Image (cartoon, rainbow, N blue to C red; front, side):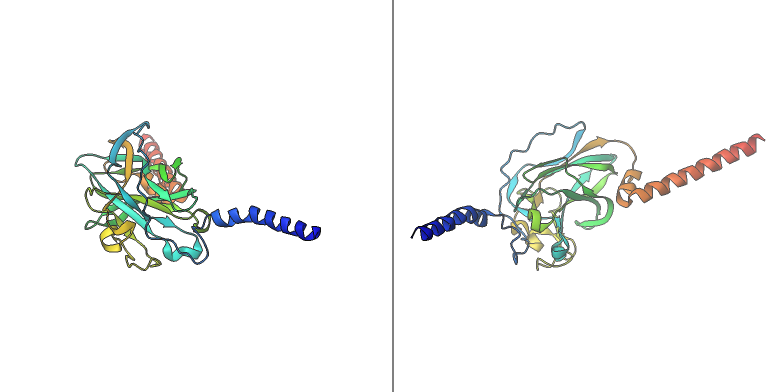
Length: 277
């Protein structure tokens, strides 16, 4: 009788220990459960006013919606679900923006946080992203407050006047952190946000850029825009700068540019010596 009672006590202790773990464990990446195309979460956190060293170039953080759309680079197992969102902004005529920081508002379906993000800027093409003019891969967010990301670019994006698209993509394993969703905006400025899923894992089409809500049905399929803010400085070069080129192509590009500059300097010295002799 006593041994049976002891056995029952041991079983009870094991249940008390294990059941909470099994019940409350993060199930965002449960086996057989694929990534989701939307999350219904109103962005209720107040948006902090900008307090950085530069100026706000573009601010689209008002009128928060009730949903979020995915924009994420997953691990190999979920490559078919790799997807990307983007939204557009306009640089007025005669201006050049040197964009140094992006603040993008979002949320997690799992534990997060995303260790890195990929940042892209695109030229405009028929109210959708066109040719890529800048990229910075694997950038660690400077600040992450529940999915609200502050990203300082390793090299500034220098853009002349015109319409451009900015894309921020979380680089996070689904099995570890779940998904990151870019929060939607209820009011539309310029064109509605765009979205693409080249691998077709979500089964909604949109293998190339298309309007995210109206055509792809992501982010709840309702609210037309995304929440983000750009900061930096105005002035400087009037075209896409060397920093953009280097950020897109890595250290090899810098080495190539330095070699060209060194060669040019050598030719100049040779000509000067020839003219003075």
